[in-house]
Image (tube, rainbow over all chains, first blue to last red; front, side, top):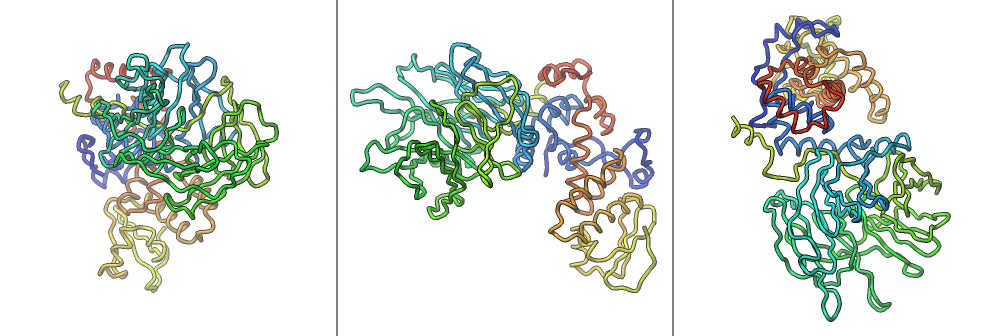
Length: 398
Length: 161
């Protein structure tokens, strides 16, 4: 892989010198210099925090670590890590409402416990509930009723979106979806801005692209858009469920393709309708999944193994949750751990469920309860500000 | 290390930068994409293949890795994983650097992966000044420039010199 600004100034040394390096633990003899592609190979395996420090090594390392292409290589490697070393859980909380914390998914997976750390969230008003609208490639879309940010918690960089304050624009409500447009290689936020009309709440749909830093109105959604639902990003589209208002109409999964910016419908699994209380969408191993809750706290989890193929919907497991809390906001499964257990957010708890024998356990998260919502993000170098901090900027400073 | 020469077509000879010859079974050599491509083309296995960038000590390590991975059946992934971590366990930075260079040159992806990961794990908590020395990189910042770059992510340096 070539990174124009990344090469170190040294050429690989002659073989003769290389072979004389003693196998000692002292660096008494100089180590062989590594060609740029191997430097990339090594640095792309480092945690983000280490890389932010290593920008101080020399100018070419700073350029490399700031290079968006390197960020992609790093992200790609991090997402392939099946032991979740580079994955973290992010929590918004009921109290304090502006509190956003995170903990290591690796620790939860392997030790069943971790201490949550406070994240340096750009939203700081303690009176406003923070909502996490979505996570994609290490970027988190997060907001309150006043502000929305695209934020990378691993680098602590963020970008504030313009024109989202509800009261200023006469919106009664708004909800957002967040994803990536692979065609233009840019991140998009879809905003459903609800306007109070005589016949009810109708959303105006707008798309924000990170690079243009502006909103643009797109076609209205031909389907009713449920308020407060979070869009699930899978296979370049956002998805949400429209629950039927009456028994003669059907529930549908609506999609919004972020590349074409067109609406569609995804076929649903053949779930049983009787006693169905609620459904939520989620993502498991890159596949769309759906959790159906029935009365009596019985949950069925379905996965669409091949996107868009109706017959590929498979029941992953059926779960009975012993003592259902009265108020029970729950998430679709967050992830499948290495041992086959499934991590979910039920009510204000994080639970892991073992489909094999139907048992639950509760990971211990110190300094963090009760939870409001839980998401997973990858630690990445992806910048929420496409214009900032590239190697080019450094050259201008010279 | 160089074993006794046998008249076996299924073996080939590799020569290290410092002149040592290694007789290698063909299926072991095939772990290396470089050697595989050479064997697929017109290169005769009777020839001695020179590896001018790899010293004997490193080549012996590389071939030990290749042999283990060539001989193990695919069902023994767990065993290979523990071999890999044991293989690199007490290796110092010099050996790791030579190994990663050899794996890159010989195109042995698995070895490149584990050696690069081991180096990354070793440097991830080291101060940048030490990493600079390990990688033998010249500091081309002025003290003011370095301080400015550091200031951009000051929080990442807590507990570091």
